[in-house]
Image 1 (cartoon, helix red, strand yellow):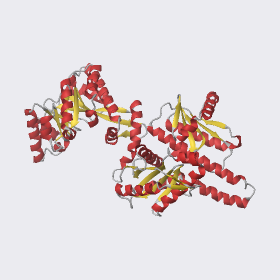
Image 2 (cartoon, helix red, strand yellow):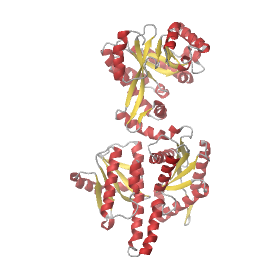
Image 3 (cartoon, helix red, strand yellow):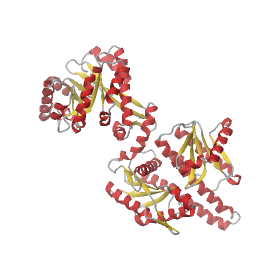
Image 4 (cartoon, one colour):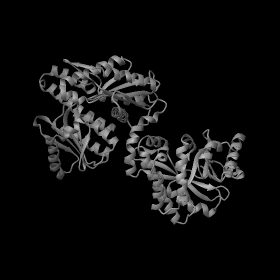
Length: 598
């Protein structure tokens, strides 16, 4: 995205027809590369001809038809409607994004993306708005220079104006997006450990002010908002106009170390912006939404940081105007990517970026490999391997966890069917349940459907739920586990002993196994307290007719101790870390042939 932003910035300054089209071609090629589509076109009105010019990566054969269809869209007002909504529209296999500044349409960007996810929607809107702003400034440059081409002294003055406008907004005199982006690039490059907040403030329905009262009124509102922000911020923090209806604020963590401090500042900014604006004899109400992200965060570029802040602002506006959504804190850097990750989850599911890894479980007395726990992994196309802790909680907050849960269930059952067909009839696969899955009325039906689809006996599947979740809602868990037990699947309480209600939970929840939390296994060889706890749990579980699995086994000494006290199964890096399906199948072929613990 940083390359796209840099190419957009190149539109500053006067250009000939040839250089303008060359710049558009370069931008279209980079947009095509970034979004992974074969064709991208940029349609603009250029120069005195006032006619649409299509440029970009389209084959010659498609130019006329596409140009005609876009012209039809112009006549029908479709692109204007897209602009007013500050969104994109799809037509068949084409997606059209308006290029605009405030309420003015300068053209359209056309991509062969039939379906666009939330992240791409935000990014396309960001590109369309920034390109429109830069084209507007470029036209202003041309107007400024047109009347003075033969006046060297005035040209020198105008050159200074051009230099000013490349870094500052002509209307509000605030730094522009290019200036803020450059500042953030330098900040993150030269002082990578110094934390800061980036706040995106957006005026809600600003285009309605332009439409209802004219652009003079809209411009006056923007100037007034800029002045109000500067009065609140003083000289300690930076403010920039980053889009037609939006402002960006930089705030150092030196002054706002805690999230509560930042929330207080943003509420002050929103209160200042939303004071009624006097236009002639009318008081106009102004509404605002704000989003904030923190740095340092694991991002590819500062452009991603800006997009994340804008997405947060839009999210706040969708929920309730005059509010702020703060995404992250200085001591938990990864949270600033939450919305971006959420937006990418659905796309990643459909594009096959998820995979199940399998961590083997062995029967301690015999040394046989008797099962495995299926663990979800996300191979992100751009960000590499995304850790489960970085996306499972996000999926749980949104609606994706249900879709992910069904995929995990079916994929685990599919693999189990293949391995049973190869002769591994006694293998049991475990999958984890989330709180939202447990509360879904269709959970039992989904499990039954997966077992039927792959012709699996119910006892070959084990469902795991952490003890803390089970203890928090014992009535629901007891009811749902009872339904699953009738179905015949095995049930396990995971991380047992980590909470404070283990015994009560064991009594009420019909689990067939308990998995001892790894914290008890870590020092069990030397710690007498851990030994007493582990031995007591094993004895108690056996009296209740439940099997015990020890998690986090990392040494031979731990394994020998667990064998001595009668623990049933073990799982951990001493046996194997989570491995791919292919590697697990190979391990299956080799392990039980030897029938011993390695």
